[in-house]
Image 1 (cartoon, rainbow, N blue to C red):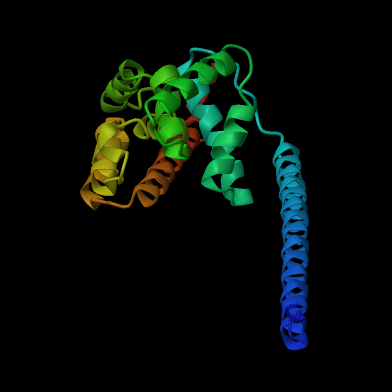
Image 2: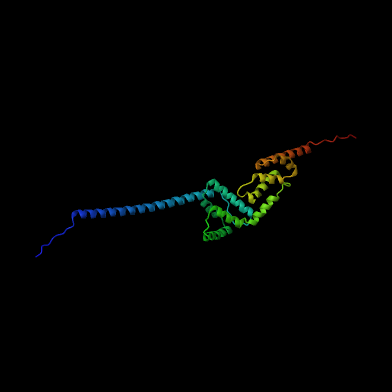
Amino acid sequence: MARRTNRSVPQGRNDMTEATQAMNAMAAAMAQQAAIQAQRDAQRDQRDEAASAARALNEFRRQDPPKFKGEHDPDKADLWLQEIEKIFEILHCSDNAKVEYATYLMIGEAEYWWRGAKKMMETNHEELTWEAFKNKFLEKYFPKSARAEKEAQFLKLYQGNLTIAEYAAKFESLAKHFRYFLNQIDEEYMCERFESGLRYEIKELVGPLEIRQYQVLVEKCKKVEQMKQSRLNRGVVGGPIRPQVEI
């Protein structure tokens, strides 16, 4: 009868297998723990980001920004953009925040328009930047035809019966629509255009000075205007008195 042999696994090999299994289990547990921690961190970051966004929105709302209903009045559309851009500058808003806040302020017809315009931009794979939004907005509410009309008014503007302050205010409100001033203002041309619209009695005094700094020119014109008005007042109040003839 053949003799049976007992082939047992060496003890050292068993120990190595158990150690490997233990290390694998530990690695799996650590990986699971890391995944759980990463998920918690992501959730915390999302909460922090949402809280930060809410605080930023509340701060924006505290500035009392005007809403835009979609009136087809170029001046109102332009004024609305100016008002909210002042707030953006003060709060140092990011490009994305500017778009989000501006569209948040749109109500009524303007909101419906933007929903459609945004879908078209997404379909055309257009990047939704603040400049892109402004271009779309102006195309809708301050079209080229309206800008051309403002430009024509700028080129034809004369002082007439306006005071220098009134003339300058009107001049500046129209100048921003002049196509050649969009990227960079030519101050020399601006001064020449301002001078050309002045009344003659003011132009004849400031023209020879050849002032080519716009604000300096406006202030000089105001002084000339005040001087002439002062002389006129003195002439009326302190004019010659006719002697009375006794009968």
